Image (cartoon, rainbow, N blue to C red; front, top):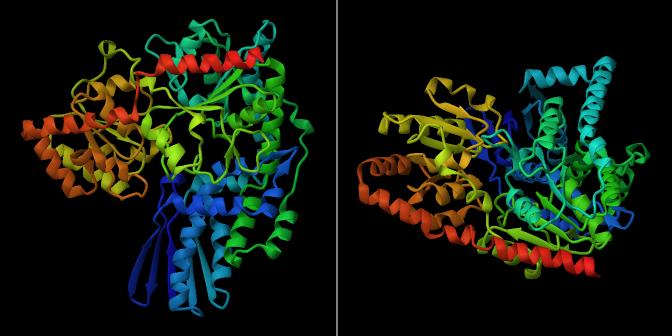
Length: 587
């Protein structure tokens, strides 16, 4: 008998590898997925070339499949990599008796279905492992009418709270404002109690300086009462005196009728040129895991149309412009010949499922993916990724710099100076994280260790490490000053690694212990790039005891950073933005 144990998908699925342990009698074979996003990109682009498949997602001249990528990419990657492991098992024992341990997570039924397709002749016993008691309790309670009714009341309360700022804005006469589109995750509370958007702040300031009226559109990626009240605080206490309104406050969603595309997918699957297991995965992911997504996207389009009609803006500028809410506004704006701008908010690499599309276009009714008239990027490196690794035309990109790195006050920092700062995004495994902390403690015992969590990481993930005597920082209004004043910075793979190189006078180390594909460009930082624990220990000892090594680290950190952040281009890029808006208005 063969026993197959599959690890649960925990935390932020974009960073989780799937582990599969296969027990043959007394021996174990351990498989680990690569978490190679180019696999998902290639597959999704294959679907994009299937005209019959794409036609299923047409709605009022708009290709709604372009919205699905943000939702389904991680699901397809999980399937493709798990199937690769299953096929290795089936090649050795195609007709075995199998015991398969499956986590009771969101992929539970998808995994069992894949097992049945890949092992059609096997005698399979399934064992379902509880991964999160609270989630399972919620799952049971959600079947109870009272719980469902209570959830609906909370959702209505959230919507009502988010609608409050709209009442004040309706009474004001706004003349063709610029819509600044972002979401609460980019909001920072400054030391003086005012709120600002860390991605759009520089553009907001300069556009207001040039006489433009601005309206902020908040995209509700988090729907809770606490998030709603934070949104209210920001709306009435914005640093640049910009009123923020909620995307979902617009549009009559009662007119958005439910749509079932399952039948169309079944019909397509009959002649689709894919193996049975892939067709099963496509059908299950779209019709079960995301069964309400088509209807939700239609509501996003309804809201976007209402917003554009209500404000008749002269331009739309979006952070996270590839997200579903901003994408809907970009499409409707283009339909009405309104200029659109996307602003880079994080790393754009050749394995990024939001950007590496086979077909991109600045026409609203494309069968591919709508892009902004101009995507404002931080530097030459990112422009090259979009235009050479991806399909973006050069004319649709503009180097503008990353101005959140330049507009902070080093002297007002009141926190702990001279600490060791670990910028943690969750790419380092729990085991490696603990080893890193122990190494820092052993080699630099006199230094305080602070761990700044990325917004996608919940504090609870590191609570179990409280015994390590570390400071866990979740929200840091003075984040860049924190980096600047640290004795030593470390980061796992994220935008924070480059921000560390740009801001900390001593440079730092970026950790890639898991050898995640797509990040090879960081090897250009030489000694600053750490891909093993032994290399980290050696580098920390040199950093502490060798002045020449420290100087080398500083030099390497700064050598390539200008390719990533060209911060001299703000005024020139703003001139371009203003001229595009002016030319459109003149027409």
